[in-house]
Length: 76
Length: 308
Image: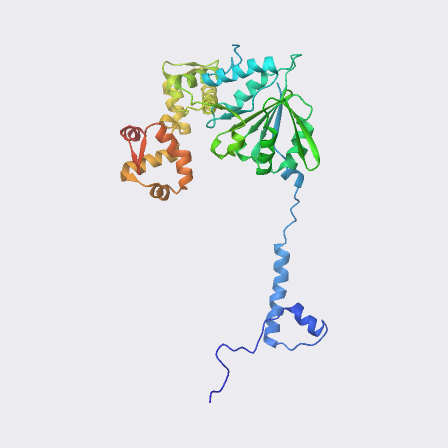
């Protein structure tokens, strides 16, 4: 008689945060691993800094200029 | 036949053809849709401009000349809004569509209808509920390209071809002396200079400017063969006007005997298309290489290699 989990079995499933919120609501408690949470907090703190550093000024796209046909008129 | 192209050197058959259409225009007020075809630097735009200069209305008023680059036209809407309505409609004007092989597909289709005229001098093109009237007595359309094979064939059928030829060394020497009226040349110097401008009028004008700069720096108005050697050394002018890539190509073929296009492309680090289009054509034209399955250097190419 075989025992244990079949090959390839995983106790976890992938689910989006949005979908989870649909089931539980945004204010429900969800159990997560301490180590995972610490790592996540550390990563998001450093990411905030990165976002600030990487922020680039918005490029203003002048659609009029980009779509202009190039021409030259000469009075002969 | 009148002499309409006095200031322009060479292109005898082009001059004859355009003169014929100008004579006809002065009787009928209508010119065919001309397609100026030929390699770069042969004078397509200059001749189109000179043609336009001779198109005057019955009162003798000359027309404006509108030159536009087709690669910047994206669609019908843009063309009719930015060009046709403000500049062409109801105006007496000559329009040159340069690089016409790059016309967008919807405008190509519109032009198929617009330029499908047999005897009528007017055409109304209806598009998106609007009517655009073309009057071919008031408006003359000229097209120009280096790549006639890329023009949609039915559209090409609506045009009258004007084919440009490469310039001879004598014609190029004449162009240089016209651009530099204040500079005198040592015997044979002008011919030597002309040999380096690749049968191309635009290059002849560019070379003239370099000579003017050289003479200006040396404070002289006489240009000698020694001066030309000095200038060539300074700015890297090679015999026959070869480019550095062409020099490398010849040297590679001299070393390895023969090579496939792929082999040469790998050796020189250039794409096969660029090699074929931009370099091999000139070397073949000058009989410096031959292609018989593989690329080989000719005896003439070997001799030139020794001079490089």
